[in-house]
Image 1: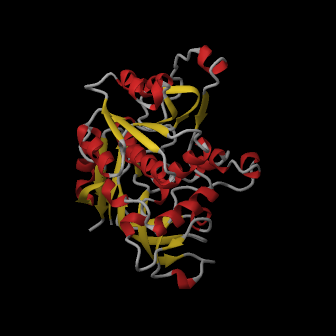
Image 2: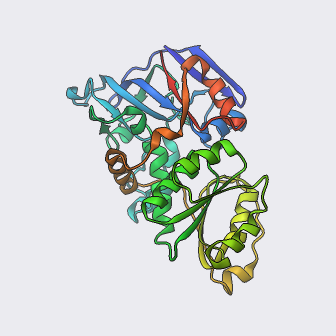
Length: 345
């Protein structure tokens, strides 16, 4: 079969590789479609601490079960489904206290990082993943929307960490796919949202999706805009979804006294940030972090997808064949496009 193999950062080749065969407990599926992801762009460009290369990359996908391993029900064959890219072990300390996103063994099996991914014609899914996360896609649900399960579930988790916002104004820094998912969930809660980014193309999507204010940080001193919002107090909550040091620092300037900051976009290990301790102690600014997702967040996410309350396809910039997956990732890296559909044939 054909598959996109990342041999080293920057060295992505679509090669002929051996077709996967089901092992005991696993399933093999034909990939109907995969979605590109900002994490895949980072992996392609600079590598990732969890990635084992060379490897087939890609981790957001929809498939059809074609083969099943020993011990797997035969009636799974032919089912169209979506799953996650990894699964908690269920037995470590963090799993036992409901913090499965911090599972000590989470990195053992990660589709597209430590095991073969979805930028391929076919994929094998280990039992530990599909037994926990197997959502059969009904005929009335668009598979493109279903493929958002993994990224949307991380946003659902982040919103749960953020909790109830006391007030009405939230700033979202970053209008990539993750920022736009945060925007849509915040709007469902009836909140007013300002979206901040450096690209008008992405901000225009935010406007279509209901952003009350869009701010281009290339052209406007964002801190000055706060004077005209929320009585000049600052934002009741700030969601950082850009994964940039300057965005983290900006979040600290935008939040009001007693407000919350959700740091969602990750920075490289060892990255330092300067925080005015006065804001934390005397102004009681609450700082939160969110990573990955949990089974209960995934369950809630699929129900949201089935409800069709979100405009997920607005985040898709186009479709490309597997042979042009590198072109799609390069486009995203240069700020052109949000997500692309990758088809195996």
